[in-house]
Image 1 (cartoon, rainbow, N blue to C red):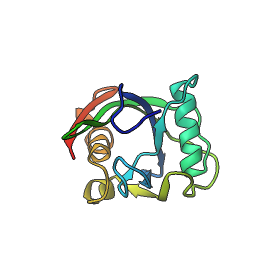
Image 2 (cartoon, rainbow, N blue to C red):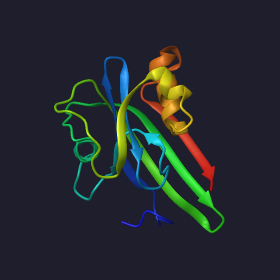
Image 3 (cartoon, rainbow, N blue to C red):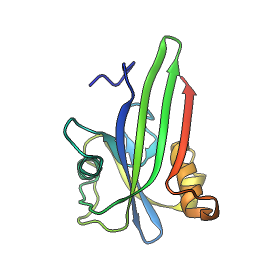
Image 4 (cartoon, rainbow, N blue to C red):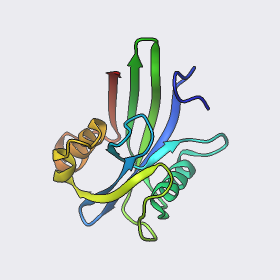
Length: 156
């Protein structure tokens, strides 16, 4: 699947993994958002459900197993550049309150760690979409819609 300058949007699934009022983030090895902290996840493969995709991606990136996630957000991420649309993802994020295993950085992850919600908001290298998701769902839940819908259009 062509990720740069795609002909169609790419469907992806992400997992908000929680433990003791903290969220597990991965430091991305590849673009988009290379070297930024983000929610683990990735593109849905042909024949795979959203649930299967997020479980596979979390296992590949974090070495843990998750199950029974609930959809909490839908995010449009569109990165434009002078020749056209560089990246276009439609991301469905799931929440997981339980996992099996000890997290470690796997494929596509330079590092992983648990962040408090306030650390997420205050860290300059956390992706903007992650900050907004954490803010609207976990810090100020009064403004939460279920599921949350966010749109990001950036120029590179």
